[in-house]
Length: 104
Image 1: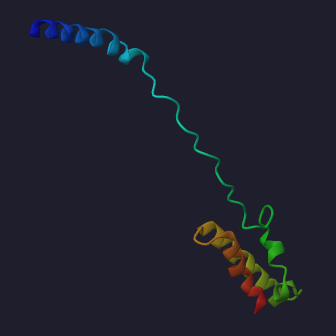
Image 2 (image 1 turned 30 degrees about the horizontal axis):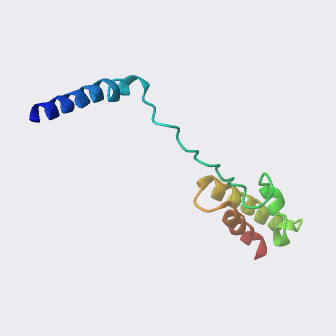
């Protein structure tokens, strides 16, 4: 009886070796990877397009056609452009920071 069991175990192990492990190296596929999803749009701070500091700074004191008004507008434009280029604040925060010059 023990010899019969040994024969069956050897037969099953041999079958497993031939059928179960023989083609793992050549035909195995890991399945397909999941989709990463869609990237969100960064936007331009809600301005609806390209930022034009010249238009954004055309308010209050900066809109006055005088030496002081033109100087304030130049400072406003420079502050917005420099802030956006630095990338420390959001575009909206840079616009708010720059236009403060015009609301003195």
